[in-house]
Amino acid sequence: MYNLVRADLYKLFKSKVIKVLIMITTLCAVTMSVMAYLIAQGKLDTGTTGIGFMFSDANVISILGVVAAGVCICGDFENKAIHDAIAAGCSRGTVIISKAITSFCAIAVVLLPYVVAAGIALSMDLRFDMGAVAVGFLHLMVEETGILSASMLLKLLAMMLILVIVYTAQLSICVPLAFIIKRPVFIIALYYGFTIMNVQLMGLRDKSAIFDAIYGYTPYSVDHSLLTLSSGIDDIIKAITVSVVFIALMLAITYSVFRKSEIN
Amino acid sequence: MINYIMKTSNLTKSYNGFNALYDVSISLKAGKIYGLIGENGAGKTTLMRLIAGLGFGTEGNIELFGHTGKSALQRERKRIGCMIEHPSLISDMSAKENLKFHRIMRGIPNKETEDELLELVGLANTGKKKAKNFSLGMKQRLGIAVALLSNPEFLILDEPTNGLDPVGVVEVRHLLKNLCEEKQMTIMISSHNLPEMYQIATDYIIIHKGEIKQTLTFEQLDENCKRHICISCDEPEKLTSILELELGTSNYKVMPDKVVKLYDYLDDKERVSRILFENGIIITNLAVEGDTLEDYFISVIGGGQHV
Image (tube, rainbow over all chains, first blue to last red; front, side, top):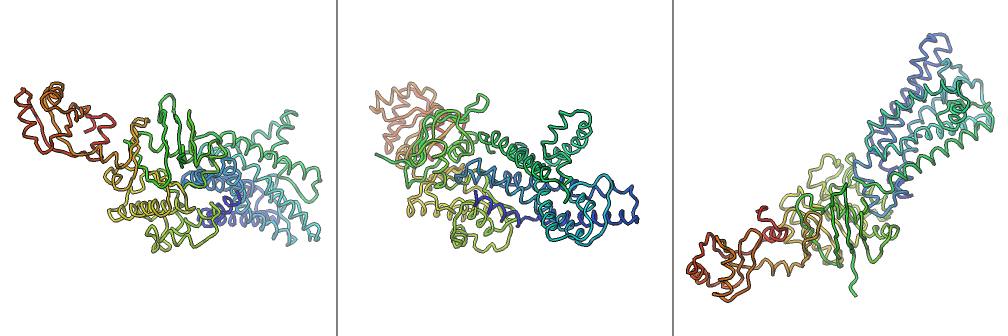
């Protein structure tokens, strides 16, 4: 598995797609930060928060993260790297896990500009605002102000890491989709539709306690994307546990589908 | 006891009731080049895919290097090199980068293998040219290099000379023969180019509609393709009885298209012609011929309609 992951990472960092994705997320992260700063300063109308959300990590990663995952897995069906790995004696389980690890690395790399943007923004003791639409890294920027102590800085880094894990868990649904559908365009469309449906489902949480409880045990619950430095340890552990279990479930589903499937 | 590199027993592969492979039982010995011959859709690629683990047989069994069972087959596949259908290439990478990718994937430490293989397949001077800009022949060469990366004991190549120019075809033929002779590598190769196959293979497996029609060695094929008098006439049944009664030979074969191949009297065809004429046979063709691999293949798969 180690060799497969190494080879995939070698391929990933040679790929133009990942470079383009990083460029796009860098631009989006900068735009998001500038807009949040200008809104907080009153130089930009609060009505523009909707546009600001378009550049936020939560929105951008739901598209570009899928592209990254899609390229990692679907691309390998196209160029027959998966065929070659299996013909070279790798088990299907190994192939799934290695592709998932590479995809998660790609998602983390694509998210990196937001991590850096949030880190820089928070180290500058500036105020940011994006109204009610702030989630993920944007929420961290909006909520945390003031000079951070060394221990706070460590906690901030931990929060950022957890957010990356939560996003990765959200996108892990693309792993079984990629192994079944094998076409990145369809996966991007499906996942984007799924995120829109998610927003609608959030409205149900107030109406049904059972649904609220179930939803809370998925990485799509907004609670896991609203972590701040003041979040309790139980929230942090829950976010990590839910994410890890969800990823494991997605990989198990992928294995059950792929273990006996024909590789064309 | 003969040790086989690969053995299939009653291997069947069905798709929605259609048998892509049916009851395939073949055994491959070490150090031989097996030519897998069949029409499009005969089941050549399906057989190769099952051996490579890209699909699963509906029934039957595959044995690799004396081992069978899922995990053992998986382990033994590390001793195989494959190029099935299209080569596994990353289009945005150069030839060397592609080899590096596959070398890392297989956990092969020695980097010098990359240059050696590029030299071997004639791609040493491609530099930074991306695989997407390669000709079909160059891609095939690179695919062969990838298949050879792990120094396999068993090489599976599906149409490896496809897209190669005549010089490339000769080079690949020499390369495969050398690998077979020097490294005792077993090679299974499929091709539509039957004359080319005749020059490369040491053994032949003829497959038709998913069934193995015949397996034979080069010597057996040569024997089967030996020179004969090809006779076409209006009454083939009467012709055979005349051959036996008047010419005293049973060394003939009636082909599916009713053409009779007579293996005697090759230097005395006037006598054959005269006796047939005297017995009222109307001959439409009488000529000395030798089967090519194509003719032989067609006769084995049972097709006057294929001619």
